[in-house]
Length: 130
Image (cartoon, rainbow, N blue to C red; front, side, top):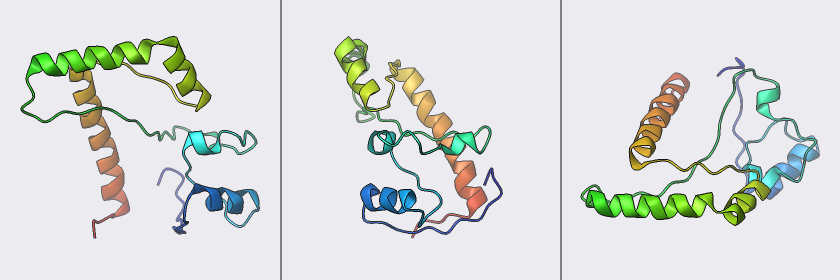
């Protein structure tokens, strides 16, 4: 959308075959997780060609809506303590990732912001659930 190009989706049975075709010149672009493509430093990122492009995967831990606030806070503190551990940070860095320790309120805000951002992309592209 940002580059004004029309792409054709080519389904692959995993990142391995997609990266093989990218490296072999059969396809011009693929969207692969950093952890799976980090060993190929000569592959340029989309951001190098499309100014302002940003896409990333994030993971978080959720709990049922009715979970008591003190339990949510206890889980949040334990998870953030783990994310602050140097061994954890180093492992994530080895995989090309960062850790982001958030409060539970900040995590709710992140989800809302991401939903809004990607909702615009989905509507602009006319993507529909099947």
